[in-house]
Image (cartoon, rainbow, N blue to C red; front, side, top):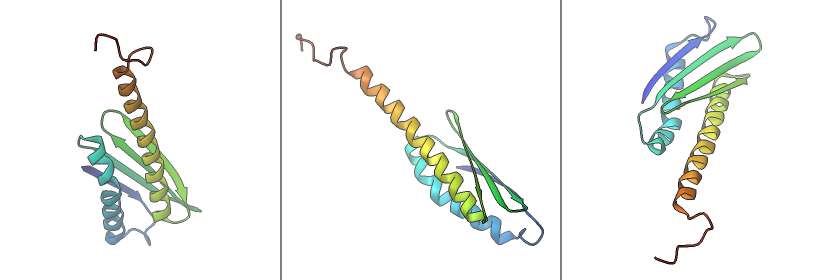
Length: 116
């Protein structure tokens, strides 16, 4: 997994351990998606501190791009919210793709042809 983390934080929150924590947390949460996707992922997290909280934007780039954006009062909550949104979108796209493949395998009227 190719992971890039961009943190735009205030000086009191800009610490090495914050970026390390966020990076480890993302790798743990998104490793399951990468195994289900079956292809290497490029992940980009952009987190910005605002006056009343944090905004986290998470992008997964593989076959297509899935983006999740979430606002939270603390950085871990904002990151988790963005991960949840991306995971939900990934699950929906996977279900749609698998459903289309199943429909292609079935005959039009839902019955197996007589020659089989």
